[in-house]
Length: 179
Ligand SMILES: O=P(O)(O)OC[C@H]1O[C@H](OP(=O)(O)OP(=O)(O)O)[C@H](O)[C@@H]1O
Ligand code: HPA
Image 1 (tube, helix red, strand yellow):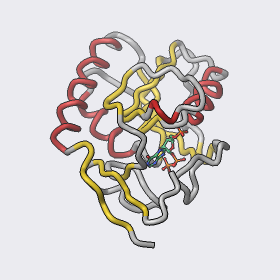
Image 2 (tube, rainbow, N blue to C red):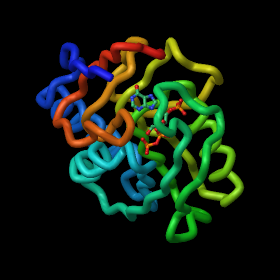
Image 3 (cartoon, helix red, strand yellow):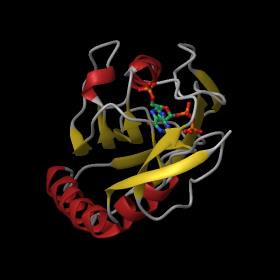
Image 4 (cartoon, rainbow, N blue to C red):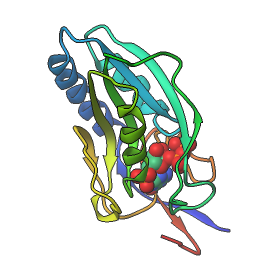
């Protein structure tokens, strides 16, 4: 299958600027609180590392691994929790850090699952949002960029586990486009 990179959708510089703003806003909103920053792996790894370093208040870090896309460019509709949190979030202020909210199914699943763990507060921060693809309405509290309905790769996001280390966000054109 031939793969060609289309135009870069978000540059490294645009990422840097926007993440600095998000870090500032989160630092102000969570000042004096017990913030646990939960990265949703694998996709969020790059954004998470940059966002955590843009936050200027003490934080706890933790991660979960979830998967629902497999090798496809459409959600399977089934969100699988591959690896759970390492510490209790009971009574903590939890901020979920996602790379992208697309159909919304992953965030919907995580909010429902995490609410049962009785955090003091539970919010969502995503680098990217594709509103045209939503299958369910979900709460997003912090959003980096709204993007159009294209399958994107880079900056943590993959196609069949490739391209995650691309330092910017690009549209992936598939010869036999499925999206
Ligand atoms: O809003 P949704 O349609 O649920 O899509 C968003 C989710 O899909 C991707 O994860 P994926 O299952 O591909 O795993 P990955 O993070 O390892 O790439 C992405 O990292 C989000 O977690
Ligand atoms: O556009 C996307 N690219 C990579 N992974 C994704 N997971 C949901 N949407 C996407």
